[in-house]
Length: 329
Image (tube, rainbow, N blue to C red; front, side, top):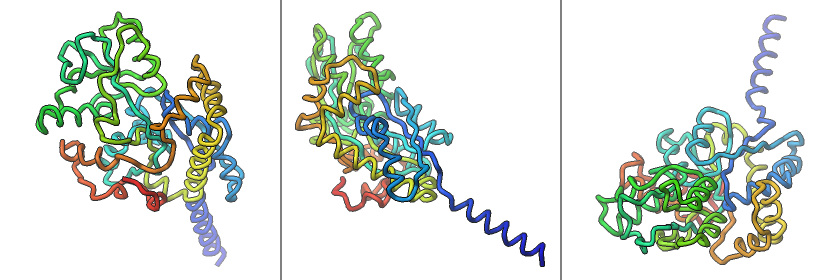
């Protein structure tokens, strides 16, 4: 009888352990004002505050910066982080490869991306040749690389989607900006993101030859939050706290843009003018919210080009149900 009681208690203890949620959520971001909501979450301890409000007083958030989406997704699959913040194309690739084992929590931002060239002979995408070398965060799979493929399909036909691939090289935004400014690396193009594109556009001879809004015909979520399905399903209160913090960050940016930009400069150490940065994020095409936009267009392109083996029917196929009430696309 005593042995049986001990066994039952052990089973109950094990069940209780299995139901316990994590006490730390590990979040990533990359360089750029695209990731401002994550910076605000970090600076203002919004995850911790949201956790305390729903009965998780010991919840803590930690933050890691990666130069590109490839390294961040590797960290997710290896179990070293819980929430990756990067381009939707990276999320889609993992969603497909894991058969739904990775999905999106929400969008983080949708901000315009410019393709900058310092080659005086290049006035548009049609002028690019094999002599041009364009930096993107990750070749073939980053949002910028996918946009180039979409543009190539429009210009040269569906079977020529890889037309620009050979011209691209993997380089994080800060390093690409420095290389473009130096002029001695062979790099003469950068499909960039704010605030680096605004700085690059002022370089001698630099000019914009394409932008994401023109290619897409509208905004695109260039930073989304995503993670493992087993993490989402096993930690519902932690996920709720994270999404609450993301909404709070969104509201803070809308109500206090200058303070948010000051936080960005404090956390990142970047030497930019806070007033210039504030004017930038207050632009009409800068969106910081949880609504996924342009994600299905990206998914269908990746399916058309056989990068995805599964063709989604809706954006809700690759996002968790927490954001189904939003007007995503």
